[in-house]
Amino acid sequence: MLKLLAFDTSTDHLSVAVQNGDLLIEHSGAGGAQSSTTLLPLILQLLAQAGLTLRELDAIVFGRGPGSFTGLRTACAVAQGLGFGAGVPLLPVDTLHAVAEEARHCFGVTRVVAVLDARMDQVYAARYVFDDQNVDADSRNLAEVHLLAPEALLVPPGFALAGNAFAAYGERLAAATARYPVLPTAVAMLRLAPALLAIGRSVAPADAAPLYVRDKVAQTTEERAAIKAGAVVATALK
Image (cartoon, rainbow, N blue to C red; front, top):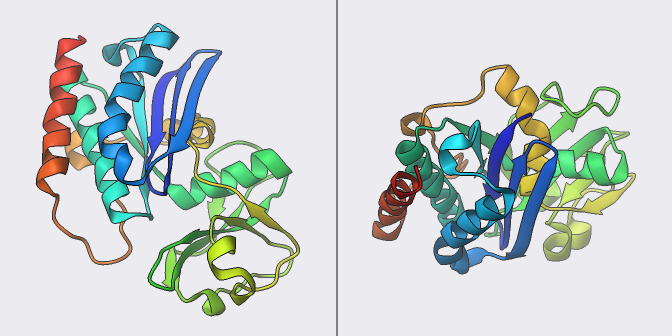
């Protein structure tokens, strides 16, 4: 059975989970600016509760985006630091894929337009189809990730909308058969992880990168420090 750590800081919601075979431990709470200071302690706490060390992990799973610039950089920096220090591969997961999976798991929908608030009067969106509600990586991305105005989002017949953009944009978003307010959770990423690992989606820490969609920006001093801190923690816990 897989031993995995997963976390997402792409929204204002912080989500962390650890899987040790059949044991699953998760935490969710306020994220945003707090994520850079609370993420590492939470990771260490959950690993300890699951009886795992970093070096025992099969992979470190993180939400690569799209989402908040600072949140994506924080998640990637921490994942790289831990991965470098412990010698563990990383599994970047698209946050919109995690949104679609959460809607599938919670509400049984198999055709989903995942939509996240991109701020600046725009949304991130992509379409997914799950085959017979199987939890696997064969959920197909039918369109590239788009950054667009809420009014420009098209929802094909038979697709549901899922994500966190409803409160911000309401009726500016296209009508759909159903709307599901869900977030990209660490547990959703853990459900996707086995098949993604099986088809070779893991990467070395040096090759991991956020998916910004908007123009990339440089790492901040704080984020570079997070990489170093993660590496130090991982080395200390070997």
